[in-house]
Amino acid sequence: QQQVKQSPQSLIVQKGGISIINCAYENTAFDYFPWYQQFPGKGPALLIAIRPDVSEKKEGRFTISFNKSAKQFSLHIMDSQPGDSATYFCAASNGGATNKLIFGTGTLLAVQP
Amino acid sequence: GAGVSQSPSNKVTEKGKDVELRCDPISGHTALYWYRQSLGQGLEFLIYFQGNSAPDKSGLPSDRFSAERTGGSVSTLTIQRTQQEDSAVYLCASRPDRGQETQYFGPGTRLLVL
Image (cartoon, rainbow over all chains, first blue to last red; front, side, top):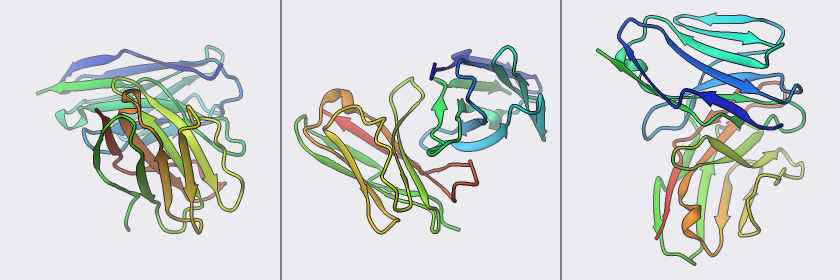
């Protein structure tokens, strides 16, 4: 119930292409779904987040698509750049007292020039 | 402003030794989290502090793990009698208050238990 499943484990995309990472969850109490970006040797940094009352959120080249009935959400990176090469984590939380995040296992993205 | 800082950045210890990991959250942030990131895995919640409330320790994997937060600011994660499976990156995050969800992560402490 607490798991967040993420795929693919790794992804190679050509510069200018679209990177798509998918996540699925079970706990319907989750109400906050962030994506974090992590570069080697650094801590994760919030990239974009969505709540289940909207189906899509776009910030620059990054878009979250959210399907509440399927309990799935995805990150789309448009016009992928070599600087986007990093590990991406989806996460979910149900607010409440702690707002603790349940993370997916991560996707290692490599954007080839 | 300054972000979340953690020390040491790297720690190598021998099996059976105790280690202390330190986290300095962003000034004014009332919530503080510890997560563990094992190789090839996602981040695993360990413990949560909010102001003067009792901490949520539900993620601590064993009684060898403990944490405290002094004066509502700095936090220390202690691992007693370290085991090789404790080798991981330990990440600290802070959040402004209950009304904001964004957690800001530090760079982590890379712990290697030989």
